[in-house]
Length: 261
Ligand code: GLP
Image 1: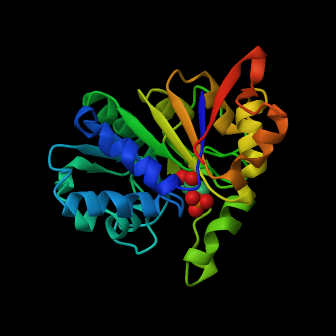
Image 2: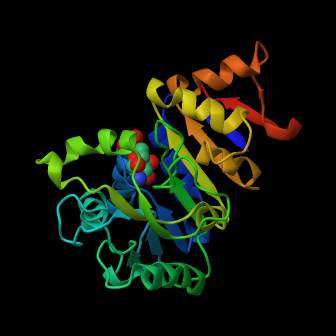
């Protein structure tokens, strides 16, 4: 795992994506507040003619169970607001797990099939929850989990309820890509900002790989970068000690840490 610490997470992430743009046919995307400014940078690059989404395909990580695609707080509607309404991605190439279905098990299998039929995800952009969850893979999510319906943790509901005008409207379940679905991506770029994420990041990078911190499963992904601001990286830097260029990981593994400023 590569750990990059920078005061400009948004700019670094956007430059990394644009630099690889031609080799990214299938892009995995995340909701949450963390990647929003990265999407803003991609919109700028689209407007200045540097990139196009016309031939891309995107898969989102998750969706609230029970929310129709046009519900303003659905993750589909959020992605449209934050990115898709501005760029030239054809609608049929924009995939989000189904929030409403007559048969969720079949719909989840179909989502996995769609990713596979597209050739797999070239790069998946992720955020992380304060407890170390990725997508809606809450604490306890197994390494081999696939797209499925999950119950949301109380902390996840608490972190997201403010997006809903009426707190009773906040769903308590979701459909999420699994840990294994994410691990299948050829590259993973996890973004984290702020002190609230520091404990989760330290456990994910320096702790054991375990369902207690779902982001820790990424330690054994062969091509994963954690892109952090200094507040989110604080716990790793403490674990790494004075010469903080290598962070200790599980099983004697070490992760490189690069400080860009
Ligand atoms: C939700 C999403 C995750 C996201 C997390 C953190 O739980 N399902 O994909 O990473 O929130 O969100 P934020 O970036 O707003 O801190």
